Image 1 (cartoon, helix red, strand yellow):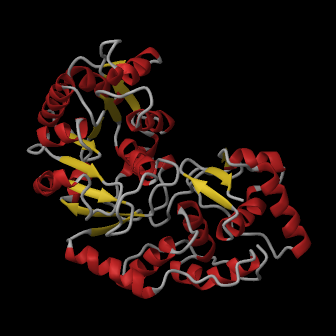
Image 2 (cartoon, helix red, strand yellow; image 1 turned 120 degrees about the horizontal axis):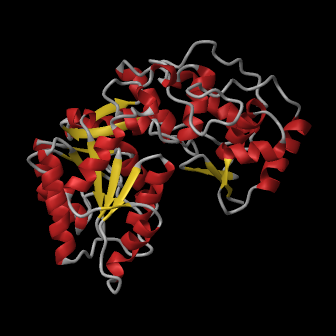
Length: 401
């Protein structure tokens, strides 16, 4: 880092007060602060307040002279909107935060949750599929959701038209979770207004995005990673060869989740994605029994997150996209001592030379440069705040200019 600010020696503190929640909100909503940068700043400075104080100087060192963190007034408005819609602020340090979600790369530092948050602690299974679903596909989604619900599982989906809607409706009595692409208070599509209200009686809606935010195309891939990240298994009922449902399935595989698919006729384009998944090794689904059988098999081997040796510290956010020399579950180490402007500029140039529009894993970049993560990580924060690079979920980096 090019600024002479001493890092905190205390572990990051959870937001247990209203002021602390406001600071977490302001830090994540600040311009060019993504999830990875949020965790790195929190690890370095100990609290969101200290990180907010340091941001302008960090940005100035990165060549951005007019940087201002998210104003308090903007964060207060979001908190008031959340209170109006009875949305709960659920930070990653809260015991009620979904344990499975902590395991994924770049887990949201906090979620907005409306409805019954206790459903997040129950066994979760995702059902996703085509918006323009066939009648048979809709019947299959309803049957799977109903039977899985009766077996004690909560159905997770994205509140979209077609398969998502059918799955949510069939799981209303047993419990269902809608993961929103926009704000948790913004229902999309509008035709699902009533469904979105009905599911709150025995389920929840959740989002990592700001209250009142209308969903845009770029929000749906982020939403999809949460759908798969919440669950032990993802069932794809219908999906075209290029579809959001297949992206959710790929996220699930990357996250170590089980992927299952319902087969379809080879001449039906809506079945092409499912047939491809089965060809590539996904479990074929004929009914809910196939899903329950696979889940029962997995119960003999508890997930890594449930073992004490791999459990994250009680009050510390997890390390996301951990580079090779960072211990699992540890926060990124603090920045090294002050570097000269020439050294910093040279390192920035090395990073930018190796990045392009196509995303590259952060750990691969660090290996290519040949320097330790403790040296490269602060430079990445500089470049992100300067708008020169962009972070994507899964620890991927790309160059923006």
